[in-house]
Image 1: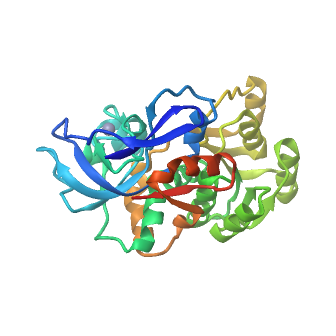
Image 2: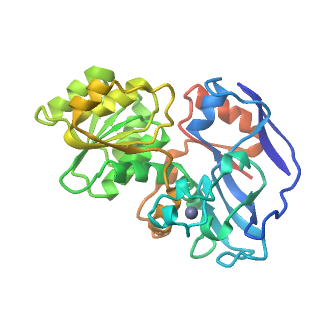
Length: 339
Ligand SMILES: [Zn+2]
């Protein structure tokens, strides 16, 4: 089968790899219908994380081809969506809704799903079958559910977005935009999106943003305060992972408010005195996407949400390198790879 390998920063190749096999009786093999490039794939691409001949990709939708002897809840022919952590969905941590921290978890990025086939560990706990074979136009939205939608949803839940709340979203990448959509679905009254790109501002508004703030850092914080009677937002989503974004999120939150942080943290150090004086709740980390998949799949199936609009470039898998370059150069927010 063909799959993406990152040789070193900036060097992405599609090459022939060995077909995956069932290893554990709880495994399934899926044939991918689509895959995509994640904003987090840009960290190694830019040299901000070490990378050496790494298989790439952790988002996936596809059709089950083969199952191990202990798999019960999915069968060959099922169309399935899974998240970037394989999880058993039965341990105490999973049952509490934190499948990203499952005691048996497997990181799908180590398997690599930017490929034609993929082995899915813990298939019963990881994969969720759709109600039937999806129409082609639903594929991008189901693909979004595999990571960015579920991650944005977790961020909105962690930030306690809801009726009567003002939600601010730091980061106008795919996850931030999905956080806007999630905040709207959760009933937020007002949604402030930080963005200085016209196309992303337009998409944020389409997903439910009521206000756009172009300023960043402390100037952005000042704008949020102006818009909220000097208090700050009740709920703030941090979807970048840098020091500036994290402090912008904490400072934009009113005392007693909640920050949901899902940007993969890189060299973030929160000064203790600032944290102490902020009086805010912080919750975040790798999102337990699996917890939300059944609900998100149903919303997509019923055409109540259209998160697939976050993909603004579609390329065949063979042109994955061009997709990485487009995201790196910010010519694309998120790239869908077709098979
Ligand atoms: Zn578990």
